[in-house]
Each structure stands twice: as structure tokens, then as C-alpha cells.
Length: 67
Image (cartoon, rainbow, N blue to C red; front, side, top):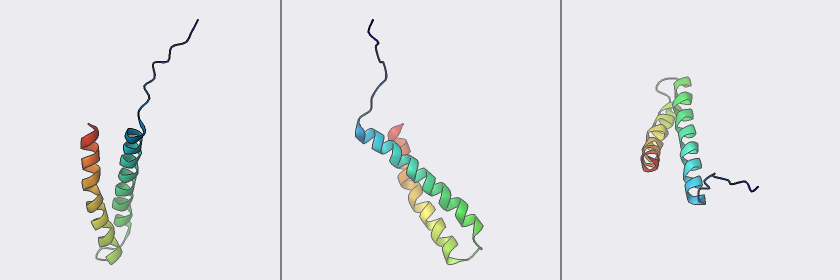
């Protein structure tokens, strides 16, 4: 008796897109959390907030593309 595998194998660009999306979401989340730990008005806090906002748009585009 032969065993049939019904598992779908995705191509490498889709797998790369998946992991890129995951990585960007982790970075955006970390920037938001770390900025809350810094003192208000500090340069580091505003830089993290700006990075969070700049990376949020590519995350939105990647997630929208995947849907």
C-alpha cells in the first residue's frame, strides 16, 4: 500500500515573504515596547517611535498582500 502525501509545498518566495513579514512584525512590536521603557522626550524614545511608524507601513503592505 502506498502512502499519499497531501501536504502542499510552497515555493521559496512565498516562504521568504512569510518570514519577512514575521520578522518585521517582531521588530515593530519590539520598537513599540522598548520606546515605552525610555524616558519621555528622550532622543532614543523618539527614534524608536519613528522607526516603529516607518516599519509599520511595510508590514501593513506585506500583510495586505498575503490576504
